[in-house]
Length: 429
Image (tube, rainbow, N blue to C red):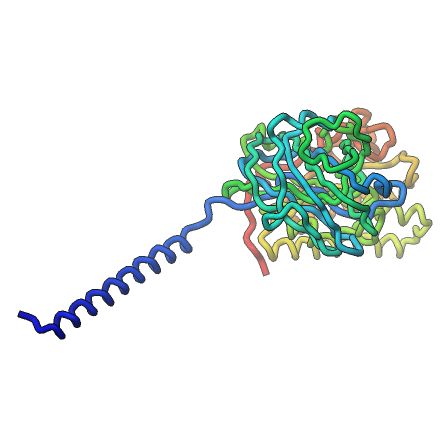
């Protein structure tokens, strides 16, 4: 028979062994969970590029004061869970959102939302949020089932106007303003209308880990000048529809800015300056399509700086900027598709001459043949006139000899190589 002391020692040893086994099992479970690859991640389903709206594109101060703003966006991916990113990227003081919601929209161009779909947005569990100057904040994730290509309505309530607005003037989508906190109301029967977006950066969905995102970077041609208001027929919209038809789930973000340039600020920041925010920082980003240069070359010609030396310097600077952006993307494993510039001979805005056209052709030849890009989308070949390659075809022209029509945008969407979007790039130093 064991002594009392021996029995106590046995019990203590059994207790310690039990603790050790439990601890080992727990550590093993944690290590196993950490080692397993994530099955899902947040990816951008819709997004826009931010800028400071020009005075005539600002939302009037009275429409911010104790008012609700409802903005309709056309998503690329479906999902069960989503989150919204609100932007104060160009604000000079904190932006206070008093309340917010997201819902299924009845239809593009309509203020009403589908009955029973409104979901209140919260930020760390609270309805009110203050977003510091220069910052962008995600909402808490929420459940809202919606199919690919759904139209969603994001409603924001403000007590007062921001000192400096952040927005996207070229929305080509109707937004609505109504007095009071009406963010979860189904019907807004007397809302005023404005064709701009404000303080809204992204909608992201929780998607399988293999789903990627392509960001379309460009100027007014990518932004959609020439498309139909509330028609969602910009070339990135049509690319998203093509991907869905091909059974390739992929987020598509339109980060075009009207008047945008590669090298100098236009109506918004130059592309080299906004590359990090509009491309590299997007959730789930795997690819970018870059179409830029019309406003760089056209602006130089319009300003009369057409000496051979100045023209060559512009081409050199554009090529170098493209290389820089590709290198920064490759460092994060992002593939870059270079897009050739579409024709604009005959347009009244820049009135290009033969030298200007020669520069466009030289830049396009470099995009096609330099090997800088992972693939090429030949938008020029897709939209030019078969008999006169220096101008848009009749079908592709919106009427101003500069911006494509919806038919032209459809041809551009078809010109993006889907095989290149299915390929994944590895990070390069």
